[in-house]
Length: 109
Length: 214
Image (cartoon, rainbow over all chains, first blue to last red; front, side):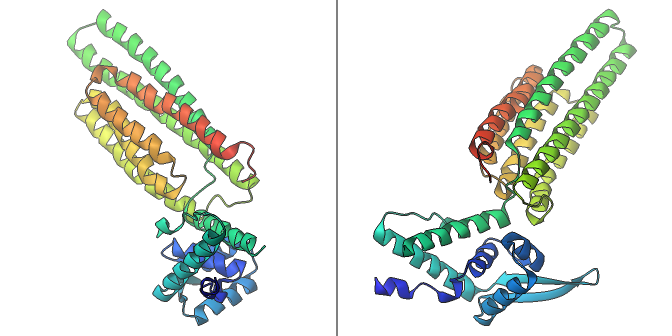
C-alpha cells in the first residue's frame, strides 16, 4: 500500500494542474485562453499552475503571434505523458485495492 | 475519505478530457427536428414527382420530356436546399441554447473541429451528387447522399458524442442497399434522413439532455 501511494504524483495534486494535464493529453496543443475557459479560473491562477508544470518539464510552451496578438500554446512533453500515465495507474491501483473500480481512461491515448 | 478525493480526481480528468476534445452541446432534439423536416421534404418531393410525371404523360413529346426532367430536378434541388437550411438552422439554435444553459461556449476549438470534420465529407458528397445530376445519373443521387452523410457522421463522431457513429453506419449501409433499388431512392432517403434521425434524436435526448443539468 505504501508503495502505491508513493506513485501518486504531488505535481498533479491540484484540480487545476490535473485539469491542464488532462486537456493536454487528448489534444495536440491547447492555447492559454482555451485552458482558462475550460477550467473557469483566472489568468494569474492558470499562469502559476502552467509555470509549475513547466518547471517539472511536463509541459512546454510555444509563444507566437497571431495577427500581432501574442498567442501561447501548451504542449505535453513525453516526460509529462509518462508521469501522467503513472499517476493514473497509481490512482487506479489505489482504488482497485479497496474496490473494483475501472477508470476506463487509458484507451484514450 | 481519501478514496473519495481520488474518485473526484478521476471524474475531473474524464470531464476535462471530454470537454476539451469533444463538442458536447449538440442537441438530441435537433435530430428529431431534422428527421421531421426530412419526412416533410420527402412527402413534398413525392408530390412534385407525381405531379410532374403526370405532366410528362400528358405531353410525352421529346422536348417537353427533357425540359420536364430538368424542371423536376430544379424543384427538388431547391426543396433539398430548403430542408438542409431548416435542419442546420434548428440544430444551431438548439445547440446554442443547450450550451448557454450549461454555461459552455458554442464557438470554440471543439465546435470548429467538429464542423470542419463533418462538412468536408458532406460537401464532397454534395458536389458528387451534382456531378451525378450533370450526367443524368439521377437514380444514384439518393444513395450517394445517404452514403456520404453516413461517412460524415462517422468522421464527426470522433469530435462529439461517439454515439453518432451508430447513426453513421446505419445511413452508410442503407445507402449501399439503396443502390440496388434505385427506383425506391426517395423511400430509402426518407427512412435514413427521416426515421433514423427521429429515432436517434429521441434516444440521444433521453440519454443526454433530459433531466440533466450537464
